[in-house]
Length: 517
Image (cartoon, rainbow, N blue to C red; front, side, top):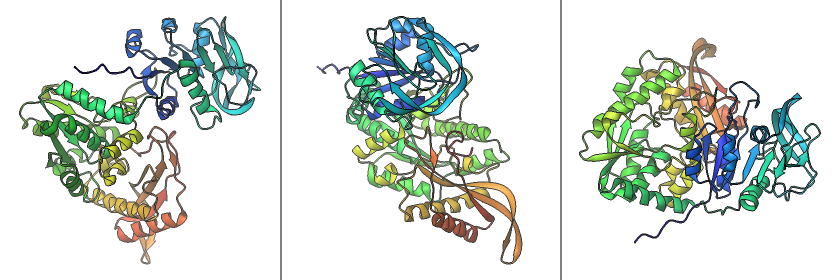
């Protein structure tokens, strides 16, 4: 008889549209506590079924009095678990529990000095004063009955409050961002001193648990997995292969939008290092034909996604008795592909989320759906996936098509492939490849004037993009050494016909995305 599985500690984050919500999740996961993010309008029964040990209400850009402002049912506070409200989440608490929120005279954004005026479990170990990161336009002017104020700033009298009897806490600032000096300590105080969860989120347990889940779900059926060559799909396939043994059939589709010699090198890794059953399909001509004349980035993504499914479907039908499709969907893919709150929009389409055609009649298995990229890399290492794959920088599903601004054709792809090879070579020579989240060129087919070989030239330009990140949700541009940029620029212009100018992208995410399209 299989012993019952122990209940894992779980924190639920209710999202009200903050740009920092994913950072809360990352901080909690780093403390080895499992958490998930639900939208503010999630059904109360769904929240109950998750069985959270504690709930965090995120920040958000709205005012609680705005028409259509995201709000939750007051019933959530009857669940009997501890709560932490952050910024807007704290204001929602005050509003629903009988306090009063009003617009501030001046919106507070940036660093403020927090002064602790009462002892509190949530602020323990922070020191009497510390710097915190504020981002709000409203203030709590009356706290609910049973609450006490713990801290204030020069412009905010209620920077932290609590009802210790009901284990409800709120902070007007953002403890999840690096700018708040005591932020990690505050979150850990909530997790371990208030909620009293255990740090039992172990990735090794996750692997064995997923293998067990897939075995139970699939039974004796076959499953199909789409492989891209990246760490996400590779780790997914390795986990599924352990669960299904010889019943996993993998398909690698060469869409013609890959980097130089990528299809060959990827297949070599799979055959020599991972012993996966993989079939390679060359569909490059088909993809280029469908993309001809298409310049809109979202339309490019959708064409590539639909065509990928079409090609995959054709190959999948050749595999008899397959009842499951295994995908390498990650948590950021899920978050970016759904409308989390009110007026927020889909950031971009992900062709591996929700693209399963009904007529394929396969059930979906997504073993990594709960994970962030860095967690997948840790799992890959423990599964002995080759370092070359684990440490590969993320590569978009639509490939080079979204690194070419405008129409995609064979000539532009060749230009970008050669530029990509140069940038990658120089970043590796500088010992930066594994330290950078992503580094790549973008082809901008806008003509600029130059002088080459004593002659006037009128050619396209290449933009180089390099960013640091932990999970792809936020990113900062890398301050690349000028010598590296100079060498990249010199090589690209001298070795690639059709380019006479190279620029460097110095924007972060937000406001930009990592990819240009």
